[in-house]
Length: 215
Image (cartoon, rainbow, N blue to C red):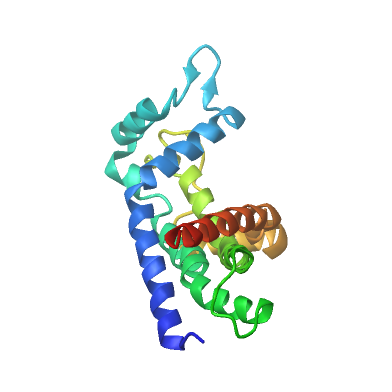
């Protein structure tokens, strides 16, 4: 049985590793989201084409209009929180959960079967995604709704140009979403789809990786 100290170290190590990786690739997350959103906003202007024509040109435009802060600033704190909770739990709890699941499926056997690995990966993926869903909602909102603000208090560029900022920071965004939309329809919006994706992804990913290590 895994000790509490070992579990804590594995969750912390997994979370920190994910936080470092997510920070490095944050600009790609931001441009991906804006490319997805611009068709549903005023990102495509009549006669002017798309605001962000593609990945490279989009990143270049963000850097030119918003600076380095526009590439790494939006949702950074929420990104770290998501990494520590979602990935930290998904990967960090996997080994200890696998041991418990194996004990139920085949008591006394030291040979961990593939089914136990799939179940464990799916379970930790579901747990991590359920806990981190509110963070993911806030992270997405912050990345989509950000740009330099002009003297008139409105965004000067980006997909939300001309609009008044809805969010000023991570904690304020949590409060604003909760007050305006509540818990179920706001912070936990999309939880079922998020959990379904995590169950399939984590169940397949962790079990396959674990199995291939011994073959």
